[in-house]
Image 1 (cartoon, rainbow, N blue to C red):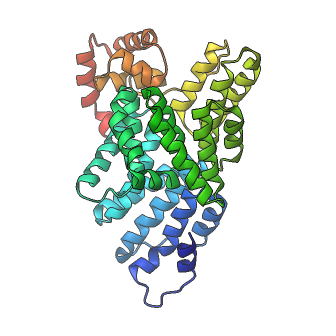
Image 2 (tube, one colour):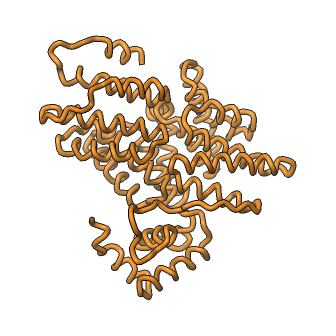
Image 3 (cartoon, helix red, strand yellow):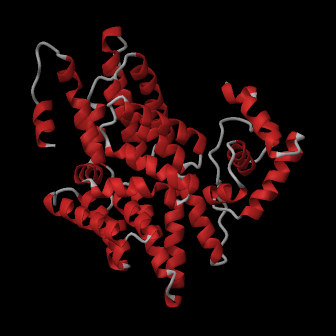
Length: 382
């Protein structure tokens, strides 16, 4: 951050490409540090409107980094539109260093919206970049692990989780660039029964926070991870209060509510905190996370309506509802009812109910017919 700030203050008379891009990478670092107000002021002070052919790399950089910032701020649709536009330019002008950043944002957004088809498309692109030697970001491995867990359970991500945690360079890079990573790794490691991996993550997150006391986001991530490992509501509360971005705050509140829910005397508090997390997830377009929390509230007898599926723009085909659309999308990819239910946070019986409605509305009789019809539909390629 110190080097980037100093570099921005130096004016290059010869306008080298790297010098032209320096202010944007400064914004990218501010975004990762979750100094969102400073990042927003910085990006708005730059001229990002150049459309000259020799400035395509600059245009792609501006779009992707601004889009990542908007996404982190919770302005999801605006952010994804800019990242998508930037990726189209970057892929055409061979600006490969930009691709992992954009792919991570698009995959993570799709995952949070329960749009697994889109998520896996970008995960495949991240894998392709890794094979070509351009991966360079621990965040890509983390998003890939999340997608594997969402698709088939935490066991499918076990190898990636162990690989991330036991590689000190990768883990450190991830902890200083992805504040939600530490808590996710602890949560996943505990599900795997890998207490050593969970403890190693907490130790690394705590060390990173101690070395960089000026970054509240790193302290929030360390507290969140430690609170999960130690079942400490105080640390989870503090993490929720100091996280600079809404999604991370909602995640800490969800974990806090889950801990309190185990105590009969804390039932009202747990419901209140779950509802706070639900509102925050909904506000930032995280339909998958909102559905999970709504399902937990339902266990307390509290019903909150929430769209579980990634919404398509415009009218849905065949008169399907959002949930029916999501079920059809996942079933057409070959998922079982159990797998669909796990991804949408509904029971397999509810999946079967919605699937029956899909068959009726589309005049189909089987999963095979659904897959053939769904994957060849013209509206999928518009």
